[in-house]
Length: 505
Image (cartoon, rainbow, N blue to C red):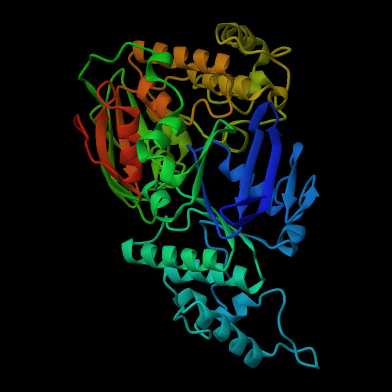
């Protein structure tokens, strides 16, 4: 198949991937042509990362086929993907920083002498030839640790060129680059397409699509919403298709009326993650935190829960400065945390539902649980939250994702928490469980509890929050009144396209 004299080099057909009850990719179709930049966009959790991992061989697909240069595969192994000419350039640079540029290019397939020793002179010469062929002025003998982020990103592309990659997957390649560095990288992308290399380009910064892309595919909830030629669409259309839901069709709630401040955060910083963050949270309020992955939202929440330490700054709860040194101390002060990764950070998979719920009960000796005493209260919570389980003694690891999330919520209802941190509260949760979690959050605010909610789901942020704090590159850049902001406006603020904050910090 050809398009505008380009040959189809990759075709994905009916690709499906599940993780437990969650469908990460649902009958996805996708094609790539030689010399094309095919942009892949979607909100966090849309399925982009899963698709990359399947193409690179890191994940196995459940259903569907992958056709590479006319050959059909039911799955790809990592070494097989590389042999076929598929290279993945990840956002996080994967280089050995203590080695030279040339050493990194040849890592794993070094040039050797007859005696089996590495021929550094030959490697340096060939590395220089490859760099010069792309007019890249990076010394082949320089240590990678001395290179700028842009040079390191470029080196990853050079490594792919060296192994004769014909399909390159670029995952947020400009996310850590400045304006001039980004321009240079996009120029390099154009040189690659001139050599008939096909590029799958993933970026949250949507204006780049119109500068570099030929086609764009929008993913939402694991499904392909649309594929269009870039010249036939616009930014507004893409953002609308990314969001996919009308706010009027989403969850509705009454908004907070009180102006009594429950929590003050002032100039809180943690080096390399976020800096000088200040905000207030009102009693009975849901303060949403929006932004791209890596913006610093979860890192901030971890500091508030004392899972990590801050470098400077103040946390003032109920007009009293607190400096918890551990989650145990944060809990004692009345701070609760529902983490994003419930499996790793929130649950004891092999322990019972009962034990997982009562583990932070302030009136319970956690070393010697009185199961008979606790079982009545836990049974009430199981019924109240509609937790689907065979009983309080069932290991929590056997429950569905939504029910596991409700177990964590039940845990905190036994505590005396006043501040609830919800980090991606409905991630991997079905629609029915979502509504129940939302109802519970609203009930907490009606009891005067305050909620900090990190979410990558824009309709969720707009519908559930009273105000929305936007973080970008570790900085809290603006706070919106949720009732006044549009979803397109909010997404634009995440991406740095617009700055129209309303409300007070």
